Image 1: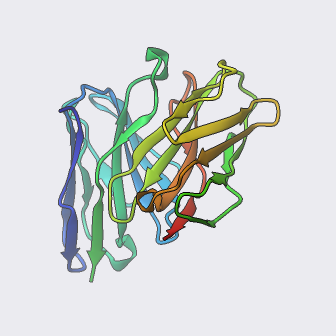
Image 2: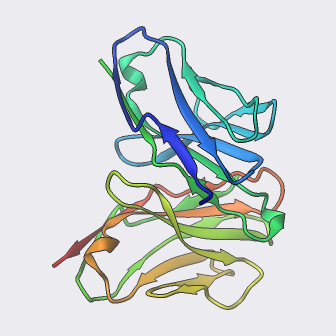
Length: 115
Length: 115
């Protein structure tokens, strides 16, 4: 079944550690996105990609970086985690709206806690 | 820039009753998509219902229906025969057709279903 997968589901890590949050999708979608969800549940776009070797920063400034070497894979990396990075991170993918469907498919999220 | 406003941070409904969640949006575009997403506690965000702006007929998915008023830029979600499993955060979202292809989310409405 086509879907989008995020690992790990939960992560507790010490300050200064490097971490990578994984996101993979099996739907062949060109577009992929990373959102940070704050405690009030509001969603903030931090990175997006329209295809391989295409990445852009989103509306909310983030110290994280992303890469898109393969269509199905869109990992997010924090070089040096800080307590301010504690949040829920959601990955999503979608088709282009002219396909007649539009809309996003979301992963289950990674809840990151930096201590 | 397009904006999406959900004026009800929290709503509650009795099981089996009907509840309506409000959403307004601001855009100068004529072609776009509107969505309602549901995010249950600690679970994956899923698409509830989708509306194409060029369609006058309101979308319906089982117990979920929308009241789409294009001139008023209003897109409310009605949940009939509410069930305990409907308890979740509900996000209204706007997607322009073509262009940036980035979803614009409202801040969400937390729905509680009382037994």
